[in-house]
Length: 586
Image (tube, rainbow, N blue to C red; front, side, top):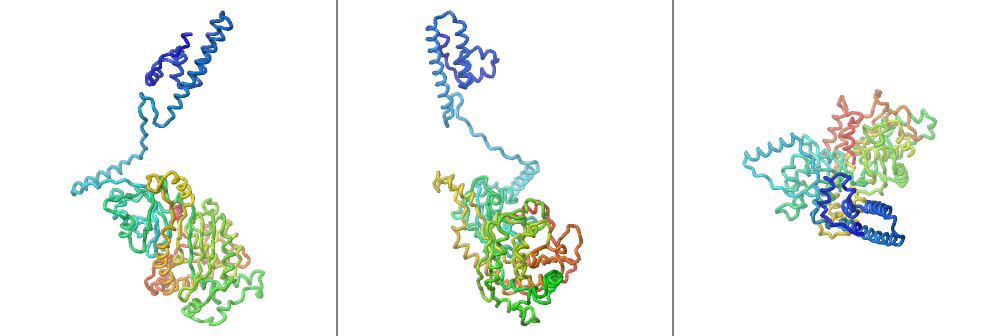
């Protein structure tokens, strides 16, 4: 019975040394308890004990049945005791902070960081040497925290949202410089926004405005000597760019990747719904197409009442009458019927540039598109259309708006939208940038996760993560929109009639590219674009309608005249690589 007694317990480090140094055959000669302690496994303990019992039973075959039964009972009790001891030891090891004395506390493994390249190391050494030569002390290093910045801006005079090289004026470029000047970005990272992982939730085109957008980056949130960092950053920003606030975010937070959806609004004067003027190129082209089809002259669209009088008036006289015109319930109903065709998932390859029909990234999901009731400001009536989608491609909303307005004003069928989702490539012009406004990006999924996470913390705890919510700044945002966005938009239209100039440039066109504007809701073969095939009279878009900053009416007229007289016009479509197309999404 003595051979079944548990042997002396030895420290774990001694057992680990034996596990490395002793051959496997010597281990099998150990007692059952030693084997169980070394292996740390209940299964091994059970197997070795069972084997030992079988050997002993075979060697002691001459014993009486009662003695065998007694020894078997004792073995079973000791076996259970050993198992219980080993099981308890395993449970204790699993508890946080309860380690064997010989092991000591476990150290947290440091996070692996990317090693700097030789070029980066050389550049850092050169900067350090230059600073030492000039007697400039090394800048102190402060901890950075992943943050989400809530901003708004008027895009007039800026070349879009995303930061660009060659000192091109962009919203992000001005914002990043302000962050550096305010101390939120260190001088070591001031030369490259990539160092602080700069990203934006929505990229806007040149001249496009935003009431709300989110920029994420690793930022110094506690700057020595600065009590109100938001106010300090706004001091460095021009008045047309505002920082509403910032919140601490998760370390993995990326504004573009985490954003669930975006909301845009497009504003346009209601007079764009007046049909083309009789005698214009588009009017004659569409009437001629109707006459050549099964639609008879009796069934073809009659002259709109607006054009039944003063058919020979000048552009200025026409514009004054257009601004006094008011949209009716029938036109509003057509708009609302049409936009329903945009909702849900569709292949929007004809509503962007540089993408083939088979490109899977053309499929976008539109959550809701809503046409608001018209509102009069000054002499002009305005209509707004809200676009709520997961994401948008380059020029997508402006092309969707053009298809909406042009189809409704020419009496086209809403069924044409279903045809535009199909393979044939057609040309859709862009509405002016002036009317487009990014309302806000939404982070519903992220906010939901943070709501669950915050249940275990107080707002003052380091692990608490506030939600990304523009509603907290609604009063300031509404005042900014009225002062810097709406006034700018209406002022340019009142002074220059930019939207009227755009629609007249469309009506002037007499080629085949817009023959999809028909009452049958079909895409004629004449307007299908075949890549690499020459077209006799392609539609030429004017760059002036991509601009949102016009100091005077004379500048608009001058640009229109210069573009009309230019021998080479804008490209029919922009040619962009896939990397640039991905960067333009938002």
